[in-house]
Length: 387
Image (cartoon, rainbow, N blue to C red; front, side, top):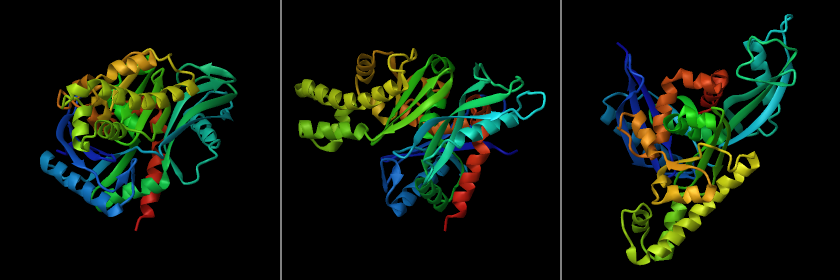
């Protein structure tokens, strides 16, 4: 009997995380076969700079994951993060094709394609997700899916998530060189949301913030759908550097101080000032983006914090005070959804990839399945260009 194995790989600037899961009949929660973390090399701000170093570190991580899981890893789902990950909302419309004016799936797809025609800056970019977030029929908003309704003009509002074609090609090539095949790609913030956010939070409205080592990414949800995604060029390493400079201590010690492992009681006030100043910079990026969306102070489920930087002491209280919203670090949600095997929210992206890879309902609920074949065609086309 064929085993249902799903492998998620999250290649970050400072570390590579791989989660290998097995889905067994009758169980909705996968069994985690392997959790592997290795230092990554050759990357900066989420993209590859030194190709050979990146291939070597990916190879090491994959071989270790195979050893721990006891399975050969042939296919992976890859998380895409870093500075070139972007999103844009575009609207487009079409005339309903059927003589009886009833909307069908073909009309929906054509409306989404019409929206894509409004993307004018696709040079050197690949669309990785197309998420329909709203429809209008003859100028009136449709509640839910429009299929089966009758009208003359269908309009779609679509969230397009794009990524640098060049950087995507580098990652696909590096993973192929490491001996694995990329079965699918998922934007990192979206992947993390599968592991962390609940349906209630996404319906009410929330922002999921992933504080990585050199970047911070956010994804905003409303009425259960993602309405925006953004990556900022600042992360937890900047806080570590500030602590090292401010307290005049080595970087290794500064990292432990940041997460509360070492207690510099004599300089606690200065440490608090350093951390709060840099976190305020990160929070300001997020708040300004929410203002542009018109959602600042208006997300009832608040801000959910994940990633390696979520381990900063008192980060929840600082976020509550800054955003004037509920705030929480996402560790409990990840632990609960993985049968307590994953207690660190830094694993949320890699584990979320495994959930995405097996949960077709999740894809359909986001409308992502509509654009999946086009995305796979892009992956196939880029692979054909590889040496």
